[in-house]
Length: 288
Ligand code: NAP
Image (cartoon, rainbow, N blue to C red; front, side, top):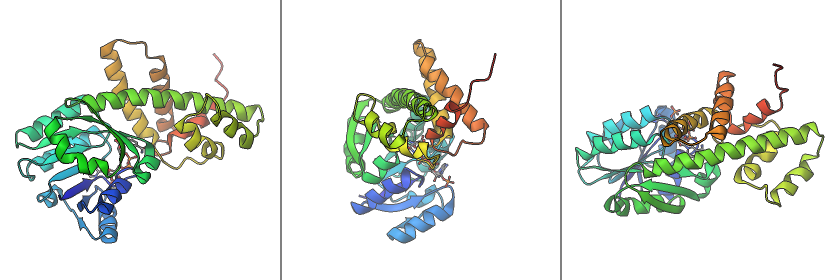
């Protein structure tokens, strides 16, 4: 099987490395060409210069940034891939984008799987991602060896879009936990509690979470290297707001998180890790 990977960022590069370790990786591509050239040279695979260079692949996986990036990449792939091949998208985008991508490829008999992931850069590096899928069975069967290269769990949630719908729910929980952890730790700092005692105590009880474990100590040291960028969290929360508005639920947590990440992005913190949220929580609220 020949596999291509497009989007070699915080998530994509380690995922591509796992494919290489399984002997599946043929070509890598990225918007900034130097990243593809460097990884390709290191792994001894092809550095693609455009989607044309994936023409011989059986499966092409993407982990790019935004909805627009998925749609332009898929448009390019639709014109070059053979019938019967599969495009797997690991980016977090809207359900609507997943359906549009699938429709574009379907006219060329190419299958599409929306396959967003959770588990952070640590999950990508360790090959322990949770992958949530919208796909038909036949496409999933073909792509399974690819997914198994970096997944701890693969869940087929339903037809096209069901993976992205599941990821939207995932992001509600992630954003809500971030709000609580950052607010709690900012308060702990103000009360003068020793982080070396506070953090393990919280982690040993009911307050533990992935975010507390992975980002608690670094945020208290003011280290905000991504990880997961604020600008991507804001993108996700805008998607979630759209879904929640149509479904008709009370969105207190979602709206507060969206407002906070919008403020961080406005302040020039878009490329910082989401744990930079603690910098807002440390501030005294403005009066009246
Ligand atoms: P990232 O570090 O910014 O990486 C994105 C990569 O995609 C960059 O290398 C970028 O190229 C490349 N890219 C963007 N548009 C492209 C295009 N049109 N064609 C080719 N390459 C393109 O972001 P990330 O953290 O890996 O996240 C990627 C996606 O996964 C996002 O949708 C994000 O929401 C989602 N996600 C992230 C995490 C996480 O913890 N980080 C977890 C789950 C899901 P450049 O080098 O030019 O920037």
